[in-house]
Amino acid sequence: MDTPSFCGAACHVMAPEFTAYPVSSHSDVACTQCHIAPGVAGFVHAKVNGTAQFFMVVLQSYPRPIMAENKLPPARVTCLGCHNPERYIGDKLLVKTAYADDEKNSRTSTIALLHVGGRDSFSHLSGIHGAHMGKIEYVATDTTNQTIPWISKTNDNGSTTEFVSTGLKSPPVGQKRTMDCIDCHNRAAHSFDTAEDALNKDMALGSPSASLPFVHKEGLALIKAKYTSRDVARASITSGLVTFYRSQYPAIWNAQQAQVKQAAETLASIYSTNVFPFMRVTWGTHPNNLGHNDYPGCFRCHDGNHNAKAGVSITNDCSACHNLLTMDDPNPKLLTDLGMR
Image (cartoon, rainbow, N blue to C red; front, side, top):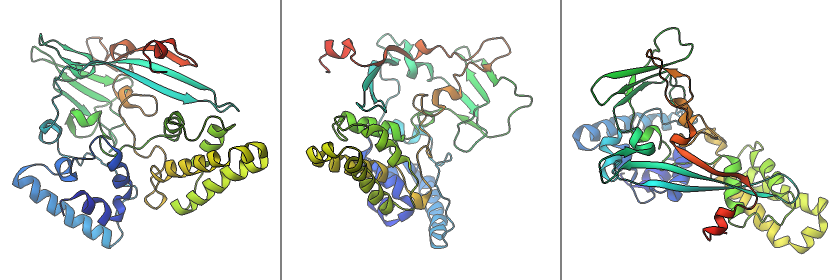
């Protein structure tokens, strides 16, 4: 009962999480290592909680979708068993490729230099990790920690500075939580893409092929449509793309039939690994707190609207976390210079 196959496959309501798990960076880590705290107390809590979940499944009273809602043990008893947040990582190059909705599926790249940082050999803290290693507490007003109106930071001299959202008229009601790894890396083992990101990543790998006219636009429309089940989605997505090229681009269909069918298969796979109608999991159901383009993420705190009485604010200076080297560039010279294109 402690195996990933039991946790994910034996319990059908875990299908979304079990689908995302094998392709995550934690695919070799058993579910119990992250979801159950070590020791007798963790074991007893897990068994009691598991019994309640069993009855919910039998009575079909389980929530849809199933949200994390602060159910994981703190990072100090899970993540830190393997990871050292103080390890100096320095800067990391991030390249994101995107395709447009025009006939040629125009390709562009955005390149950012992430200041991950850490603690260097001189014990200096820097970058994203370094800035968040002190004691930071917060209060969220929703169960997924997307709205954070109050933050307290313990300074090096032991004093604390409280930051409150602009316009907050009374103290927020909610549990104070100590910020740890999971507050940013909240989808470490069960990450779901946005429709745009999923399609862009697979197109960058070659399927759907960018040589197929309007494949980005048509593909996006097909995977974002609403379907009653994954089987219906697979059939509708496949037939929809084939019908589009047969009717609108018969020459392309005749010459690139194999590529069209492969593209349809890829689109169906993208949908089936991210959307689960029976559990009401769709695009954007599970927010990912890394970054700030698709979800609030960093901007939950670094929005420029969290102020302290002394007049200081939590920084929203972009360069504190990254430098944007190029944005939406169709042919970035940097990638050529680095031998990446």
